[in-house]
Every structure is written in structure tokens, then in C-alpha cells.
Amino acid sequence: MERRDALKTFGAAMAAAISGTALAGEHDHHHDHGAMGNPYAALIASSGDCLKTGEACLAHCLVLLGKGDKEMAACAQSVNELLAVCGALGRLAGQNAKRTAAFAKVAAEVCADCEKECRKHEKKHAECKACADSCAACLKECKKLSA
Image (tube, rainbow, N blue to C red; front, side, top):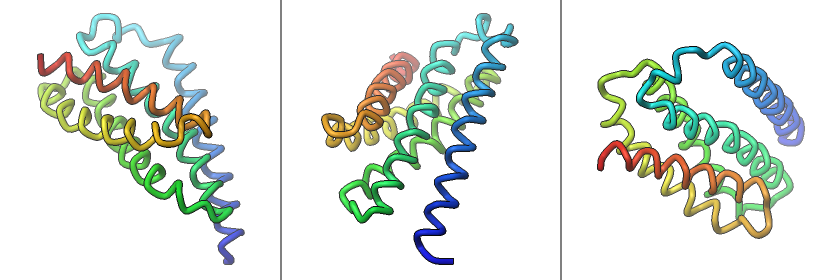
């Protein structure tokens, strides 16, 4: 498979994942009766927003990388790490897990790193700005747990 074909396939998979995430989010929004009683409700919301904007940012970075824009490599890497961490953070918070606050400390560092990297591109790429803003909001929620 040539590089271009691989990028097209990956792009299609990302688009499907993003639309699936959006649909799942809509479904959860209508039937999530437990989040209001969860002390981590704001953390769940902010980590979910990071996932949504991060997926869009990563997809955008990959398109640009595919066109030869190597400047986006560090952004793609930091967003990829963010997606892994915020996914886990949201699941832990959603379960009101006893290690949520401890994990939030790690997530705060990852959010700060991603925000810093995305801010480098925010004036040129709306996806990076949205991701950076979401990272800042999630970082704020994570820090509340260690206060």
C-alpha cells in the first residue's frame, strides 16, 4: 500500500471515529442520569470535550503531515497522548474511581503539554485552537482535584 493510500484509509477511519464519538456523545447526553450525582461531572465533561476536539486536531494534523507539513508532527504526537490520557480520565471519573484524583495529576501534565504545542498553531489552524482551549479547561478541572 502506498503512503497516499494509507493516509486516505487512516483519514477515513478517523472521520468514522469522530462521527461515532459525536453520536455516542449525543446518546450519552440524553440518557446519562448518573453524571449529575458524580462529584467528577465537570471533569467528565472537560475530558470528553478534549477527546472531541483532540480527534479533530489529530485528523487535521495527519492531513497536513500527509501533504508534507512536518511542522505538525509534534502537535500530532501531543494530541495522540492527550487522547489516550483523557479517554482513561473520563472513564475513571465516570466510575467515580478512587484513583481518579491521582490520575488527574498525570492528565494535567499531558493537557498542559498538549495545550502548549497546540498554541503554537492556533492562529493558523482552528482545530489546534479548539484543542488548546479544551486542554486549558481540562487542566483547570484536573488542578481542582489537587487543590
